[in-house]
Image 1 (cartoon, rainbow over the protein chains, first blue to last red):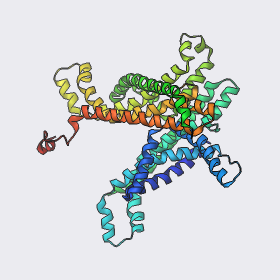
Image 2 (image 1 turned 90 degrees about the horizontal axis):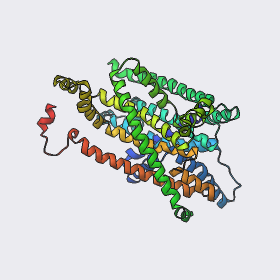
Image 3 (image 1 turned 120 degrees about the vertical axis):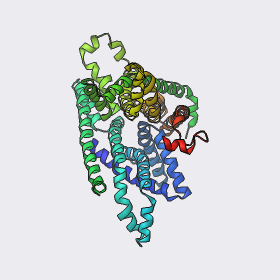
Image 4 (image 1 turned 60 degrees about the vertical axis):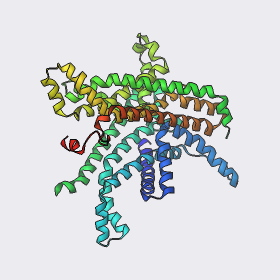
Length: 212
Length: 241
């Protein structure tokens, strides 16, 4: 559950991050202004507050809207609320990661590609994107690690993730220490595995520059 | 929207702000006291101690704050020897458990910050201080730490904001911090937006205040590292660095 939640949230965060970075880099005032508001607000609020706001507030919001159209009572699933909340929060961090990575790409490369007569899509796919991946990976890995740890707080809205299960099991057999220690180890395991995975990816994408 | 309920219960939120500030400031201070020796041990690579500190940092940075809090608050109460020990009056209280967890967590993150700052200190600074005949203690106290801690300021600012946000988990173990106030409002009057939005706004204000404070501190303590410090430094002096 923790892993599924983290991966779904990561997908949402990546999408939002890409959109946000595109908005911020577009130079249009409305786009960059709204992205700026988004990142500032999200990074100023604790993840737990955001999750409770989206879970309780979102529930009411949906039903307020639904009431207007005469829908039946709709229940926001806990999983979905968790994914939206965490994806929404880390989308803001992703925006900064992607924007930073994009700005590291020397401007001259895009100009050179234009001079070669490549069109916008080709430039993005063949020149910018490969380097974007390379530059963004360390930041991306960092956000992922924080995101995984952040998923622990969704147990507060009653989702049965690692922490939620450990809590229930620990209470029923009266050995909370054992179960929380196990949850702790499980998170450490995820941390360990994904750190190595990202290091491998970074090596893979870095090779091309070092070989020259 | 019924924000009048928030104003009617302003004491709840004022108490919440006070609780959050207490937890944040105290845990950052205690965390710093833990991180200072640990950071030096990590930077110097002292035998045995280095491995121990490394394990501490790895566990606290690799796991969620919430799990750590549960482990200390609910987990420790399972053992009878903890309940019988003199520490029980402390470990029974949610406030102390939150403070201990946050401090240990902050200490682990700060250890890495201090280690990084110490390791990027130019080797010449240490050599020059040793050549002047300073004892090892004085080399650290008068030369290396003042230099390293200044450069650690921007990262430390991030860490403090992280602790402010992390302290919100204290509301889960029934503490009345800012989020706790929001949750109480929600539970009492069934108003989801108002309580949580007020909490979010309060957190944003505190975050901006902290960021502003650290900006000021950076302007004061990192002035010597700024390149655009006006006319006082000639381009030639920069080139010679």
